[in-house]
Image (cartoon, rainbow over all chains, first blue to last red; front, side):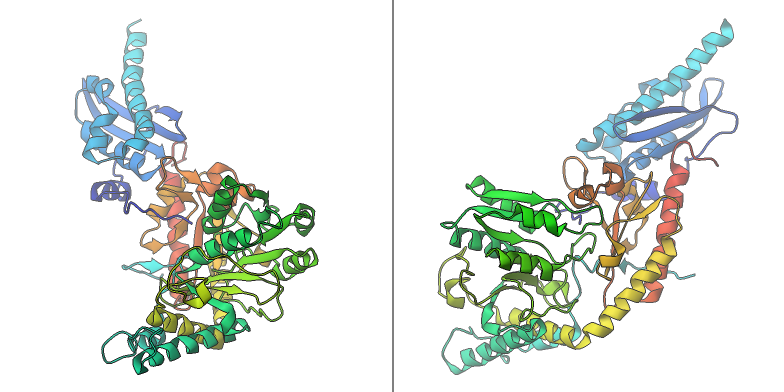
Length: 130
Length: 391
């Protein structure tokens, strides 16, 4: 069946994050955003305290690179300013892990989910103000 | 509970370790103190080396119940497939240019047919039933007056499904068409009697039955109209059909591996049956699991399963330290689901989730139990990670 003439497609960091996704799961009472595209699914959910991301969790259905990228994103962004969610770019995590360029479409789904999460809270804030 | 901190190898359909008895035989042909000489040389050392080559031919011929002079040494099954298909197609091209094969053949076969199609040959591709088995009526209908060659593999490398090469051969003989069989997955594992089987050309390779990599053979039946044109030239060895210095140590290796396989086949088959049934028994109740290929007509050494709503690449990584094969080609630009499983009617997603467990002589029940446990655990973990999972 399969064989990969280019050798191991995963680096040590991808393997570590895939094996130990400490930020996977749900947050009780919080509603996740779900983005499905490119044959993968990513859900993100967060707790906001003041202007900070207090807790950030993910669920993902896709390849090991996507799961590792989601874990890396959550670990990096937890504790940061909420406004940064919309600034997240797939390239950041693709370079740091790294993720092969051919998988960019899948990592862009994570980017879309991060942006949707940032915007969803802003939408809720507008609704609360109204 | 069984635990393994080191890898557990269940990919014997891809390759097998060389049997220590084979290594011992080969070691006698490598060094200055051994029979290392060129077997084509006429001096004493050459003759000693040639004796090993001749002995290996007899050992492999005994396994297949054929004559050793009907065997051509090659570098492996891929070369044998190329020599058989392209060689026979060109040899018989003046009679007709129609060829027949199956969509589920190994790439070593399908790519040769694609290449021949570009060179003016007309290829008919037969698709299997959902079980993976060829519909013999479709084969009969596909053979035309200008058909020269049919190529059907014996045991499918992905699913383990066994084709009825005896009936296929009878159909081909009845229509004066050559039959080539890619038997890379069955030589040394299943009984094959070439004196009785109506097979004209058969490909095989040593590393699938505990011999070394880099050596295989092509059987060419000694009957009118059955011949191949060579693909390479120079030296005149092997009646010019496959010239080049014979690798005596590798040939001695395949010979010894064939001898061992012949002696131990019945016991090995029983061992493989027990392991496959144990593996399937350990995972068959996992939600959404599907067995690929007809269980009743599959080789005991293979178990191929797909699973609903699991991503295949993640499953393969989550299964480590299990060494198994997956149903996708991760090396390609896009993840291509197995064309073999797609031909059996599996969706892209199910084909991509496929895992092939393949067992061998050294496989233990403990390894199989570990594999089943690991599979169940990996599926549970990936499902827990997926959006929509109820915590």
